[in-house]
Amino acid sequence: MPTINRRGGPRPNAGRPRGERTTVVRLPVDIALAARRAAEARGGNMSGIGAFLSGEARLIASAPLVTASVACGFPSPAEDSLDRPLDLNELHGIGLSSVFLVRVHGDSMIGVGLHHGDIAVVNKAVEARHGRIVVACLNGDFTLKTYQVRDDRIVLHPENPAFPDIEVPAEADFQVWGVVTGSSRVF
Image 1 (cartoon, rainbow, N blue to C red):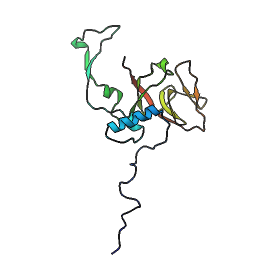
Image 2 (spheres, one colour; image 1 turned 30 degrees about the horizontal axis):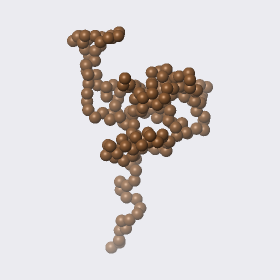
Image 3 (cartoon, helix red, strand yellow; image 1 turned 60 degrees about the horizontal axis):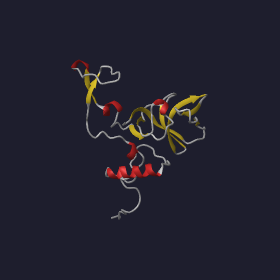
Image 4 (cartoon, rainbow, N blue to C red; image 1 turned 120 degrees about the vertical axis):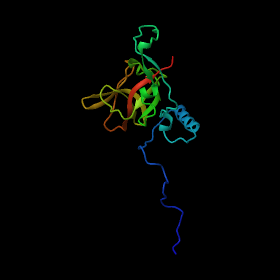
């Protein structure tokens, strides 16, 4: 009877699970440490940036949606101006595997209402096209800019005249991680 060696070699269900492709990126140390703490708080280990940025819908909550226009005040919520309750998770797609959240850092996108500290909702399933706001990784650095195509070249355009355009060289390591589909700000 042959002896079965149970050491070494391929084993069923061993190794990193198959899924999305991964790449090495540089993160500021404070964000990397926050990602590690967030992953550990969830009871897991640091398994990539997805563990930090994935939005989780932990509960279903909704609020009445008033359909009347609001100039500069709050209308009396009359019964005839109420629509079905609005679920913000549903509105932003939170909980979908293609949606993640990222905190905006800096002032390069204030022209489109994205300010330092805001939370941007990003959808990986939405196609990057001219004029859309994207989260991109250029040579290992993340940026949030307006995606533009000029003369068959990709340009990442800030929406603040104090910042220069970033032209993406053809030989650059460049990926669009997703398109910004919404944002949230707490005053």
